[in-house]
Length: 244
Image 1 (cartoon, rainbow, N blue to C red):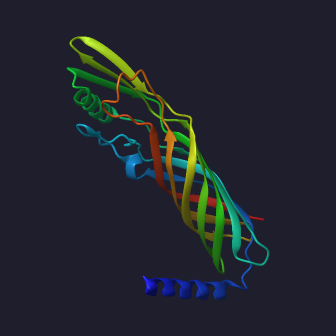
Image 2 (image 1 turned 90 degrees about the vertical axis):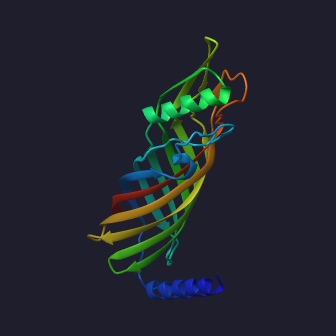
Image 3 (image 1 turned 30 degrees about the vertical axis):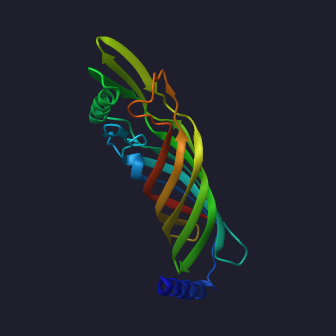
């Protein structure tokens, strides 16, 4: 670990010295690409009986679009950067509903379980943080750390009916419009096509400890009970870069 830290410090110092005389310019990007859920957000496993996976999100690979920019501190390669992006992570499919129905049936110990879902994962990320740029002629490499918020516009609503002795009982996991803390980091490559126009390839990771989820009409806490949905995504995007 000590050697790795020393090597990283030497490389950073070398790159910094190499780029010290290069001129960096403020910029903004418009971008779009793919957003891939990771971790519990992507998990579609209900879990074992009495050990339910309450935070499995059943999220799907979707798309992201957004705006991004950086404003440099005078005569340095350090910048204040910001990103705003919209993500769609899909909806539950028939296999997800079947797994949930079977899980709730086991969890409640009933004769029958049914689950239906509607709505999608749609949210907005607003992130800010420091950025350092390595500049090589027309090519720039940006490294950034981010913090901010994720604002949910909707999450899939899950409606469940468990039937025992011919008597049905229904309850629901409602769609959430809550907000939560978010953090992450990104790396991108920017290439100048002209003095003011370029292209940018960005790899971005965003995570949130979770947004609040409301459940209604529960008679007990048997079965899966999601009250806070963690969100984590890896995004790969391509965009246009505009210098100013």
